[in-house]
Amino acid sequence: MGFFDKIKSAITKTTSALSHEIKRIVTRSPRLTGNSLEELEAALLGADLGLPMAQQIIAAVRAAYESQGRSGLDVFEIAAREVEKSLSSVSTALIRQTDGPTVVSLVGINGTGKTTTAAKLAHLIQGQGGIAVLAACDTFRAAAIEQLKLWGTRLNIPVVAGAYQADPAAVAHDAITAALARNATYLFIDTAGRLHTKHNLMQELAKVHRVMDRKLAGAPHEVLLVLDGSSGQNAINQAREFNKICKLTGLVITKLDGTSKGGVVVAIQRELGIPVKFIGVGEQPDDLQPFIARDFANALFEIRD
Image 1 (cartoon, one colour):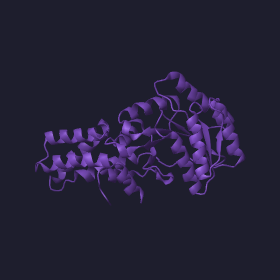
Image 2 (cartoon, helix red, strand yellow):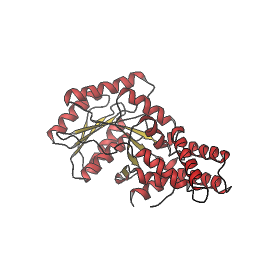
Image 3 (cartoon, helix red, strand yellow):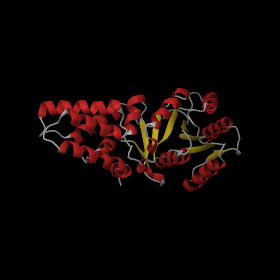
Image 4 (cartoon, helix red, strand yellow):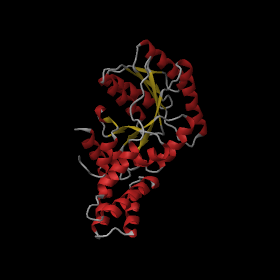
Protein backbone atom coordinates (compact mmCIF):
# COMPACT_ATOMS: atom_id res chain seq x y z
CA MET A 1 0.00 0.00 0.00
CA GLY A 2 1.48 3.37 -1.08
CA PHE A 3 1.52 6.62 0.88
CA PHE A 4 -1.67 7.90 -0.77
CA ASP A 5 -3.66 4.82 0.18
CA LYS A 6 -2.21 4.73 3.68
CA ILE A 7 -2.89 8.39 4.38
CA LYS A 8 -6.35 8.16 2.80
CA SER A 9 -7.13 5.29 5.16
CA ALA A 10 -5.65 7.14 8.15
CA ILE A 11 -7.65 10.35 7.63
CA THR A 12 -10.94 8.72 6.65
CA LYS A 13 -12.86 10.53 9.40
CA THR A 14 -11.53 13.90 8.24
CA THR A 15 -12.16 13.32 4.54
CA SER A 16 -15.61 11.84 5.12
CA ALA A 17 -16.85 14.78 7.17
CA LEU A 18 -15.23 17.38 4.91
CA SER A 19 -16.38 15.83 1.62
CA HIS A 20 -19.93 15.45 2.88
CA GLU A 21 -20.14 19.13 3.79
CA ILE A 22 -18.55 20.38 0.57
CA LYS A 23 -20.83 18.22 -1.59
CA ARG A 24 -23.87 19.41 0.34
CA ILE A 25 -22.92 23.05 -0.16
CA VAL A 26 -21.89 23.01 -3.84
CA THR A 27 -24.69 20.76 -5.13
CA ARG A 28 -27.52 22.63 -3.41
CA SER A 29 -27.64 25.52 -5.86
CA PRO A 30 -26.53 26.24 -9.43
CA ARG A 31 -25.06 29.52 -8.15
CA LEU A 32 -22.26 30.09 -5.70
CA THR A 33 -23.55 32.73 -3.29
CA GLY A 34 -22.03 34.63 -0.41
CA ASN A 35 -23.85 32.32 1.99
CA SER A 36 -22.47 29.27 0.19
CA LEU A 37 -18.93 30.60 0.51
CA GLU A 38 -19.45 31.27 4.22
CA GLU A 39 -20.68 27.70 4.71
CA LEU A 40 -17.74 26.38 2.74
CA GLU A 41 -15.36 28.35 4.93
CA ALA A 42 -17.06 26.96 8.04
CA ALA A 43 -16.62 23.39 6.71
CA LEU A 44 -12.91 23.98 6.12
CA LEU A 45 -12.51 25.47 9.59
CA GLY A 46 -14.37 22.47 11.02
CA ALA A 47 -11.60 20.22 9.69
CA ASP A 48 -9.07 22.46 11.51
CA LEU A 49 -7.44 23.73 8.32
CA GLY A 50 -7.11 27.11 10.03
CA LEU A 51 -8.45 30.51 9.02
CA PRO A 52 -5.58 31.60 6.70
CA MET A 53 -5.79 28.35 4.68
CA ALA A 54 -9.60 28.43 4.60
CA GLN A 55 -9.54 32.01 3.32
CA GLN A 56 -6.94 31.12 0.68
CA ILE A 57 -9.16 28.30 -0.60
CA ILE A 58 -12.27 30.49 -0.59
CA ALA A 59 -10.45 33.21 -2.56
CA ALA A 60 -9.35 30.64 -5.15
CA VAL A 61 -12.88 29.19 -5.42
CA ARG A 62 -14.38 32.65 -5.83
CA ALA A 63 -11.85 33.57 -8.53
CA ALA A 64 -12.52 30.34 -10.44
CA TYR A 65 -16.28 30.87 -10.21
CA GLU A 66 -16.01 34.43 -11.51
CA SER A 67 -13.87 33.37 -14.48
CA GLN A 68 -15.41 29.98 -15.35
CA GLY A 69 -18.90 29.99 -13.89
CA ARG A 70 -20.52 27.22 -11.91
CA SER A 71 -20.31 24.54 -14.62
CA GLY A 72 -16.52 24.45 -14.69
CA LEU A 73 -16.05 24.72 -10.93
CA ASP A 74 -14.38 21.82 -9.09
CA VAL A 75 -14.12 22.90 -5.45
CA PHE A 76 -12.35 19.69 -4.44
CA GLU A 77 -9.64 20.10 -7.06
CA ILE A 78 -9.15 23.78 -6.24
CA ALA A 79 -8.94 23.10 -2.50
CA ALA A 80 -6.47 20.25 -2.98
CA ARG A 81 -4.16 22.35 -5.16
CA GLU A 82 -4.18 25.26 -2.69
CA VAL A 83 -3.33 22.91 0.19
CA GLU A 84 -0.61 21.25 -1.86
CA LYS A 85 0.82 24.67 -2.75
CA SER A 86 0.98 25.62 0.91
CA LEU A 87 2.48 22.32 2.07
CA SER A 88 5.07 22.26 -0.74
CA SER A 89 6.52 25.65 0.21
CA VAL A 90 9.15 24.12 2.52
CA SER A 91 11.48 21.11 2.33
CA THR A 92 10.22 17.95 4.05
CA ALA A 93 13.46 15.95 3.72
CA LEU A 94 15.20 14.79 6.89
CA ILE A 95 18.34 16.86 7.49
CA ARG A 96 21.58 14.97 6.84
CA GLN A 97 25.02 16.06 8.04
CA THR A 98 27.82 15.51 5.56
CA ASP A 99 30.25 14.49 8.31
CA GLY A 100 29.47 12.46 11.42
CA PRO A 101 26.10 11.46 12.84
CA THR A 102 23.00 13.58 12.36
CA VAL A 103 21.44 14.02 15.79
CA VAL A 104 17.63 14.13 15.81
CA SER A 105 15.82 15.15 18.99
CA LEU A 106 12.19 14.10 19.32
CA VAL A 107 10.19 16.43 21.57
CA GLY A 108 6.56 16.87 22.57
CA ILE A 109 4.02 16.44 25.34
CA ASN A 110 3.20 13.12 26.99
CA GLY A 111 1.38 10.47 25.00
CA THR A 112 2.03 11.65 21.44
CA GLY A 113 4.14 8.62 20.50
CA LYS A 114 7.71 9.96 20.68
CA THR A 115 9.28 6.67 21.76
CA THR A 116 7.58 4.67 19.03
CA THR A 117 8.37 7.38 16.48
CA ALA A 118 12.08 7.35 17.40
CA ALA A 119 12.19 3.58 16.84
CA LYS A 120 10.32 3.80 13.54
CA LEU A 121 12.63 6.55 12.27
CA ALA A 122 15.67 4.45 13.15
CA HIS A 123 14.09 1.50 11.33
CA LEU A 124 13.48 3.69 8.28
CA ILE A 125 17.12 4.83 8.20
CA GLN A 126 18.44 1.28 8.54
CA GLY A 127 16.10 0.19 5.76
CA GLN A 128 17.79 2.81 3.55
CA GLY A 129 21.21 1.38 4.34
CA GLY A 130 22.15 3.82 7.09
CA ILE A 131 23.35 3.13 10.64
CA ALA A 132 21.01 4.27 13.41
CA VAL A 133 21.40 4.54 17.18
CA LEU A 134 18.63 5.24 19.70
CA ALA A 135 18.96 7.13 22.98
CA ALA A 136 16.53 6.71 25.88
CA CYS A 137 16.58 10.23 27.33
CA ASP A 138 13.12 9.96 28.85
CA THR A 139 14.57 8.95 32.21
CA PHE A 140 11.55 10.08 34.23
CA ARG A 141 9.36 7.26 32.96
CA ALA A 142 10.88 3.84 33.51
CA ALA A 143 8.45 2.35 31.02
CA ALA A 144 9.83 4.60 28.28
CA ILE A 145 13.34 3.21 28.75
CA GLU A 146 12.07 -0.36 28.62
CA GLN A 147 9.82 0.39 25.66
CA LEU A 148 12.72 1.80 23.62
CA LYS A 149 14.93 -1.17 24.56
CA LEU A 150 12.21 -3.55 23.37
CA TRP A 151 11.97 -1.68 20.07
CA GLY A 152 15.77 -1.82 19.76
CA THR A 153 15.77 -5.59 20.27
CA ARG A 154 12.87 -6.07 17.86
CA LEU A 155 14.47 -3.99 15.12
CA ASN A 156 18.13 -4.83 15.86
CA ILE A 157 19.05 -1.22 16.65
CA PRO A 158 21.46 -0.31 19.49
CA VAL A 159 19.94 1.69 22.37
CA VAL A 160 21.94 3.91 24.72
CA ALA A 161 20.18 4.18 28.08
CA GLY A 162 20.90 5.19 31.65
CA ALA A 163 19.22 4.34 34.91
CA TYR A 164 15.72 5.46 35.82
CA GLN A 165 15.81 9.14 36.90
CA ALA A 166 19.34 9.60 35.53
CA ASP A 167 20.31 12.98 34.13
CA PRO A 168 18.88 13.02 30.57
CA ALA A 169 21.62 15.39 29.43
CA ALA A 170 24.26 12.86 30.54
CA VAL A 171 22.48 10.10 28.60
CA ALA A 172 22.39 12.32 25.50
CA HIS A 173 26.12 13.04 25.93
CA ASP A 174 26.91 9.32 26.15
CA ALA A 175 24.68 8.56 23.18
CA ILE A 176 26.59 11.00 20.97
CA THR A 177 29.84 9.32 22.06
CA ALA A 178 28.36 5.93 21.11
CA ALA A 179 27.06 7.21 17.77
CA LEU A 180 30.48 8.62 16.89
CA ALA A 181 32.17 5.34 17.84
CA ARG A 182 29.76 3.35 15.66
CA ASN A 183 30.08 5.74 12.69
CA ALA A 184 26.30 6.12 12.90
CA THR A 185 24.40 7.95 10.21
CA TYR A 186 21.67 9.09 12.62
CA LEU A 187 21.19 9.28 16.37
CA PHE A 188 17.57 9.56 17.49
CA ILE A 189 17.04 11.06 20.94
CA ASP A 190 13.79 10.14 22.71
CA THR A 191 13.18 12.98 25.19
CA ALA A 192 10.72 13.02 28.07
CA GLY A 193 7.19 14.19 27.42
CA ARG A 194 6.56 17.59 28.93
CA LEU A 195 3.70 20.05 28.95
CA HIS A 196 4.59 23.12 26.93
CA THR A 197 3.14 25.24 29.76
CA LYS A 198 5.64 23.95 32.37
CA HIS A 199 8.51 26.45 32.28
CA ASN A 200 10.97 24.40 34.35
CA LEU A 201 10.55 21.30 32.19
CA MET A 202 10.95 23.31 29.00
CA GLN A 203 14.16 24.84 30.37
CA GLU A 204 15.43 21.34 31.15
CA LEU A 205 14.91 20.39 27.50
CA ALA A 206 16.91 23.43 26.46
CA LYS A 207 19.72 22.24 28.78
CA VAL A 208 19.75 18.78 27.17
CA HIS A 209 20.13 20.42 23.77
CA ARG A 210 22.97 22.66 25.02
CA VAL A 211 24.87 19.62 26.29
CA MET A 212 24.44 17.93 22.90
CA ASP A 213 25.85 21.00 21.15
CA ARG A 214 28.91 21.07 23.44
CA LYS A 215 29.60 17.40 22.66
CA LEU A 216 28.94 17.70 18.91
CA ALA A 217 28.78 21.14 17.34
CA GLY A 218 25.37 21.94 15.91
CA ALA A 219 23.58 19.06 17.64
CA PRO A 220 20.73 18.46 17.64
CA HIS A 221 20.73 19.07 13.91
CA GLU A 222 17.05 18.21 13.62
CA VAL A 223 14.36 18.87 16.26
CA LEU A 224 11.12 17.09 15.44
CA LEU A 225 7.96 17.89 17.39
CA VAL A 226 5.74 14.81 17.64
CA LEU A 227 2.07 15.84 17.67
CA ASP A 228 -1.11 13.89 18.23
CA GLY A 229 -3.22 14.71 15.17
CA SER A 230 -6.42 14.39 17.18
CA SER A 231 -5.47 17.32 19.44
CA GLY A 232 -6.70 19.81 16.83
CA GLN A 233 -5.98 23.48 17.44
CA ASN A 234 -4.15 22.70 20.69
CA ALA A 235 -1.42 21.20 18.53
CA ILE A 236 -0.73 24.69 17.18
CA ASN A 237 -0.24 26.02 20.72
CA GLN A 238 2.16 23.17 21.47
CA ALA A 239 4.15 23.86 18.30
CA ARG A 240 4.32 27.58 19.05
CA GLU A 241 5.62 27.08 22.62
CA PHE A 242 8.13 24.33 21.81
CA ASN A 243 9.43 26.44 18.93
CA LYS A 244 10.28 29.23 21.39
CA ILE A 245 12.49 26.95 23.50
CA CYS A 246 14.11 24.75 20.86
CA LYS A 247 13.95 25.87 17.26
CA LEU A 248 11.82 23.22 15.58
CA THR A 249 12.93 21.95 12.19
CA GLY A 250 10.01 19.64 11.48
CA LEU A 251 6.84 17.93 12.64
CA VAL A 252 5.75 14.32 12.96
CA ILE A 253 1.98 13.89 13.08
CA THR A 254 0.63 10.72 14.72
CA LYS A 255 -2.82 9.26 15.45
CA LEU A 256 -4.60 10.90 12.53
CA ASP A 257 -6.78 7.84 12.13
CA GLY A 258 -8.90 8.72 15.15
CA THR A 259 -9.81 12.30 14.28
CA SER A 260 -11.94 14.40 11.96
CA LYS A 261 -9.49 17.29 12.51
CA GLY A 262 -6.72 16.15 10.17
CA GLY A 263 -6.54 19.58 8.58
CA VAL A 264 -4.45 20.74 11.55
CA VAL A 265 -1.43 19.44 9.60
CA VAL A 266 -2.01 22.25 7.12
CA ALA A 267 -2.82 24.87 9.76
CA ILE A 268 0.41 24.37 11.70
CA GLN A 269 2.65 24.57 8.67
CA ARG A 270 0.76 27.56 7.30
CA GLU A 271 0.95 29.51 10.58
CA LEU A 272 4.44 28.60 11.81
CA GLY A 273 6.26 27.63 8.63
CA ILE A 274 7.44 24.35 10.16
CA PRO A 275 7.39 21.49 7.64
CA VAL A 276 5.57 18.23 8.27
CA LYS A 277 8.25 15.60 7.66
CA PHE A 278 6.55 12.34 8.66
CA ILE A 279 3.07 11.03 9.32
CA GLY A 280 2.19 7.99 11.38
CA VAL A 281 -0.43 5.91 9.57
CA GLY A 282 -0.47 2.75 11.69
CA GLU A 283 1.17 0.66 14.39
CA GLN A 284 3.75 -1.30 12.38
CA PRO A 285 7.41 -0.23 12.01
CA ASP A 286 6.87 0.63 8.33
CA ASP A 287 3.80 2.74 9.06
CA LEU A 288 5.76 5.95 9.66
CA GLN A 289 5.84 7.53 6.22
CA PRO A 290 7.83 10.46 4.79
CA PHE A 291 5.35 13.24 4.10
CA ILE A 292 4.31 13.83 0.47
CA ALA A 293 2.36 17.09 0.09
CA ARG A 294 0.48 16.22 -3.10
CA ASP A 295 -0.66 12.83 -1.82
CA PHE A 296 -1.81 14.33 1.47
CA ALA A 297 -3.74 17.13 -0.27
CA ASN A 298 -5.37 14.68 -2.68
CA ALA A 299 -6.28 12.27 0.13
CA LEU A 300 -7.74 15.12 2.20
CA PHE A 301 -10.18 15.99 -0.59
CA GLU A 302 -10.57 12.46 -1.96
CA ILE A 303 -8.89 13.09 -5.30
CA ARG A 304 -6.91 10.35 -7.04
CA ASP A 305 -4.50 11.34 -9.83
